[in-house]
Length: 424
Image (cartoon, rainbow, N blue to C red; front, side):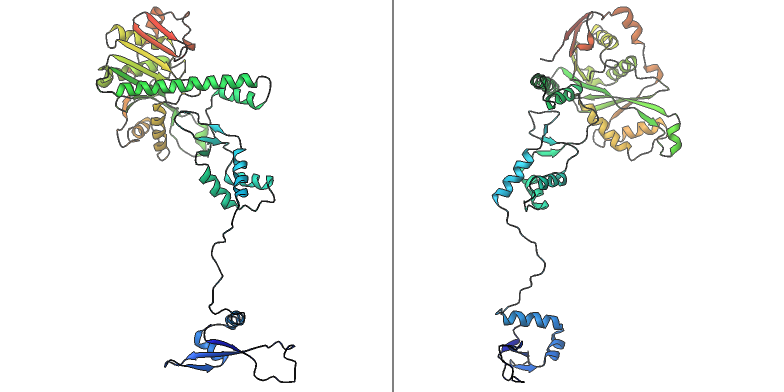
């Protein structure tokens, strides 16, 4: 561009008026001669030397005539839009207007809030443009504001196992009926019970980990049924598969987990089978029986945890002098997330990438699911399942106790059961 010079027209032909002519200047093209001087050349030679097109010459000449001395390429680059505080306030107001829920667990320990699972940032932006059609806010700016100014806001994943009380109270609250104020109070009370139970579980777990503690805390639960063989061809949908059961016992003292595994050819999943698994683990793991106080946490499944057979097992252990005190505590229904569920999640993640043809394949998956502190697997045989039910039917009568409504069962003396309705 520095080698192109613009000079006035020296000579005009045909006697035209200079103001009416489209040619108002003359372009002179120079090239360096290697000795510090410039030599004038024609336009074609200038284009050949610098390997540029005629269009490029026209652009440079136009900029030169307009007074530019240096060429600036205006192509590319990010287009920066300057948004006002009004635009930022509009976005914040729109996001705050979306209904949200708080966390299902540990509300006091986290400020996380969740939007509906059927929403995302793109859907929010589309709703924003509908509400403010005159706004010039771009999608990327809306996303930047959401991530920067709302770090504790996320989109909830679709849930498959919800609390029926929470669903009922939320429907009554959203209905804006005369029962809405009472539903808000009941929902708040329900959440207080959940938080109290979680705090009690955390406290028991911490107490059992203290040096010199005489308390052993367990979390017990039965994993979802696994089937073998888990083949993918269409004929397997119409064939009978073998059910495999896995009863997990998480030891909070050492963060170890013991898995009792069996299939339906050996036994079912009744209260007698669950009690036999717990009895087998208590006899095979010395870390559990070395302490004199046992605390067991579980969900509210009456078939597995709230029955006479489990109470008879606890009385039997107290009568034999294995423990001085046994307590069984239950989390609130719908909010019964235990340490066993984290162990089961590790197993299910491993099972997604493996094929199971026989029960031994499932047991091998459980054994190798965790690299650090592998799960201890106890293969339950037919001789391991004992008939606690016959003895419980003869000795224990719980018709007046109403075990199904208990949240805390404590046994310190054979024949004496202490029950609390709430964990306070």
